[in-house]
Length: 221
Ligand SMILES: *[C@@H]1O[C@H](CO)[C@@H](O)[C@H](O)[C@H]1NC(C)=O
Image (cartoon, rainbow, N blue to C red):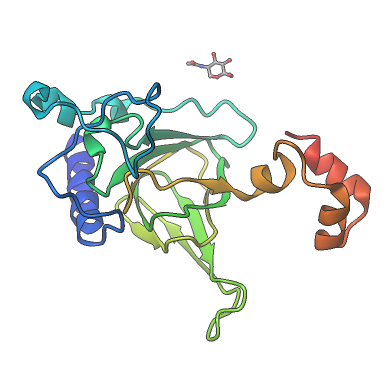
């Protein structure tokens, strides 16, 4: 298990580095400082003084801890983006661990800034993504697969995708991203859980359903 975990990390690192979309670094590293208080905006984060950087800045030990899947979706994402791991700043990569209860789902979503490379460690996942609506060759096409431990699937940048645990046991996956902060747009949350809510007339017309259907969906957030 530990060896498989390590191999997965290495594969993810290699693939992600060769396809990084974030700006290329102009220095070896730029370990981020906690810039929550900073008034200046930069595309990325502010660097820690390199003389105070140590090996610990390049270490993250949290990924062995299973996420708590006791929630309505039955899944939990443990993020290892630049926000959790400041050493990733300017390196163009990040990771997540995803835990799935039996029949748990990582609901349809997309990442505006990254392609995703998913490795299944345990369990059986039904995964898929959909191409853009008016793609000239394959409009709105769904690509799906059932994945088993050791299988890898990629989700292209910006396309809606999902994973569903179709097994009777827990499932675990790791995913690498070609961005230090890929961002996540969960479709249901964005449309029915925005703050303030999207005007219900917009949603009833867009989905061509009764207003009560939209109210019921909004009521879940
Ligand atoms: C998991 O989350 C549920 C719901 O929030 C909570 O009741 C439970 O105590 C959590 N379990 C652990 C092990 O943290």
